[in-house]
Length: 231
Ligand SMILES: Nc1ncnc2c1ncn2[C@@H]1O[C@H](COP(=O)(O)OP(=O)(O)OP(=O)(O)O)[C@@H](O)[C@H]1O
Image 1 (cartoon, rainbow, N blue to C red):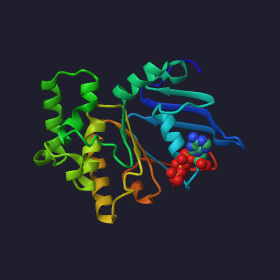
Image 2: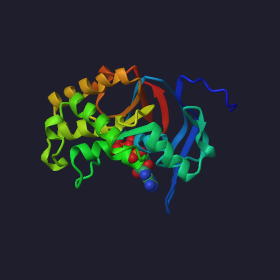
Image 3: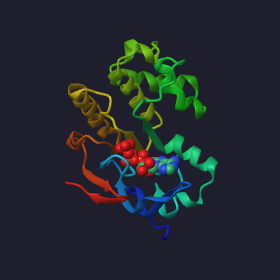
Image 4: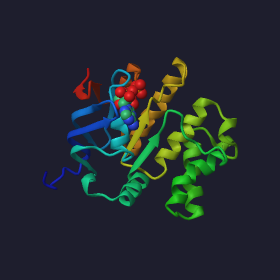
């Protein structure tokens, strides 16, 4: 593939394959994935349990390798990157919101939000400035000094969203954003995610819950390792 990338394409994946080899078999989990995500697009990937959704999310998030195919992130050829380069891209270009949020229990809410900026060695005054804007935006200002266990699940999720946003990533990856929430809180989460439109960040949501389609521009279904458009 030539490196004449469309700058509006945040993600370009062509014919990507992934196998898992165990002593008893080689499992072809992803069988030629093609996916393009444009700047600011909200995308969902649905599919049955075991169809490879988390595996694909991990590959897109540079947390796992793949066998064959091309993957360009903001025009960067992932096949050419070292482990260190990938870590840097994860910090500066990607935001992660895991199903269990992965907040650091020994840090306050504000420190959790500031954590990626601390890793990037951004000054403490700039960290405070940015975290305070996000705390305010997500209705968490009065919880800034609390610890994660002192927050409701919905509040913890908003901390995770704030932390994912703080480095102004080109893409946020969300694993089952409504997984731990009841119907009312799921709707609230989708409303909060909808407000991220103004950040011009692309979002990739992996979910079992078809209600996420309310906020997405395009939807895909992953079945038996093949990704297809889903209406
Ligand atoms: N490290 C691994 N080694 C071997 N097989 C694996 C490994 N990780 C995942 N698998 C297998 O790959 C397949 C896809 O797993 P994956 O977790 O990506 O599915 P999923 O669609 O995210 O499922 P769910 O919706 O249940 O989370 C499954 O059959 C799983 O058992």
